Image (cartoon, rainbow, N blue to C red; front, side, top):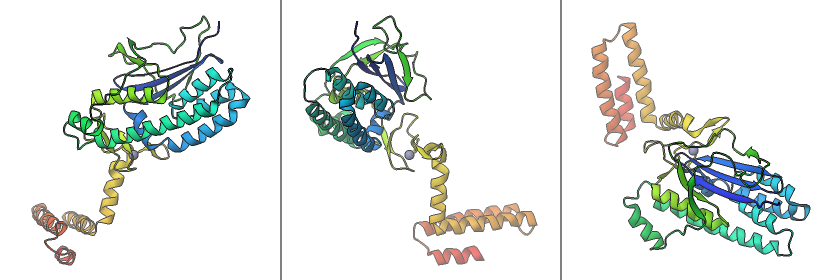
Length: 315
Ligand SMILES: [Zn+2]
């Protein structure tokens, strides 16, 4: 018996999981993201790759579906699964794949435009009332949840169709999924980009996920670890992510670019050394710091000049 390819998406309390069962090769591809990541990557990171992959898929159309699967296995954006799935299910029959691709690209663009507004203007830090903001942006138009059912969180990949278990290929192997605190969730079996996007949008809206711009790379990310987080978890250099290096890097940059703070820090070190050499007491040092800080702040707010502050520090 031939099984049909299937694609499903669900969001637990901490993760977003996308799974594609390809019936031809009996494999399941799984993409796992941190909560809030898939739409921020969709808006900020994947656009260029999408174009290249769609071009590649077009080249593979006449060479068979296995090539298409090999391509999709390496992509970061699971939205592209929908194109592959729809194309492979129809390649046997006579139809215009060109119009399928055109339609897919149009939907992808529409979803991306909407997602950009959702993340930057609706689910952002300055939004006081999410409901009012939503109405201002989309009037009363609700996201339409099609092809969604409430089911237990899947323990196994999509292999309930035959006696031969499917091979699982994980696109993002550093994650292990399953969230036992949340036994049931909505599972969406989208047929097109807009169904998938509307499902994700509704999840983010209901949970009021807040998106921010990373202070280091400038890209959007979901502030799910509390509102004080200022950096995203994208790779910045080598294996280090923005969150690892953000705080110290931004602090360094600020100090280097700011002659007032730089002068203050240099003088602080010199004066602190004087305690060690015995030319200044701790008490005198504390008095000096208090006055120096006061003058530094006055200088930062423009009440005294940099030259005036430097002259005082040199005394
Ligand atoms: Zn970042």
